[in-house]
Amino acid sequence: MFKFAHFNFNVLDLKKSIAFYKAALDLEPFREKTADDGSFKLVYLHDKDTSFELELTWLKDRTEKYDLGECEFHLAVATDAMGCVCYDNPGMGIYFITDPDGYWIEIVPA
Image (cartoon, rainbow, N blue to C red; front, side):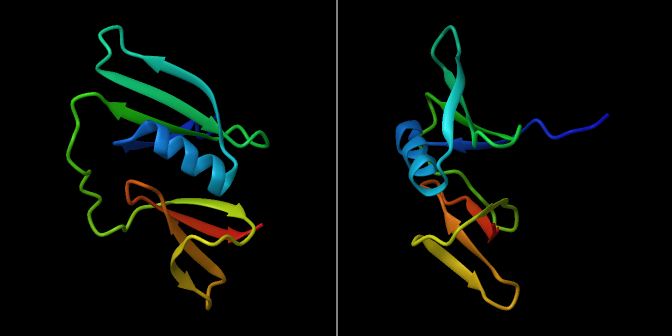
């Protein structure tokens, strides 16, 4: 049997990203792993209703912004409208928000 386990975004500021996902999508951290040498930290977020997880990866030595290409990949969630829209597609009834690192999150009607 196949099921999705998690999706990963690499982030520059872990605290800022956790705060964004809590405020925008009500995602909560529920487990984490820190490398023994402190070189990375993984924080897993969930929505309390599904088994899907969003993994945020912070790398200690990373200082430059991640190259996200042309934002052609994205995470999609179903939720109510919110005020941080970066692209609206009324014809399809969807819109996108962007997180602190520039990742696009597609919002589909709940």
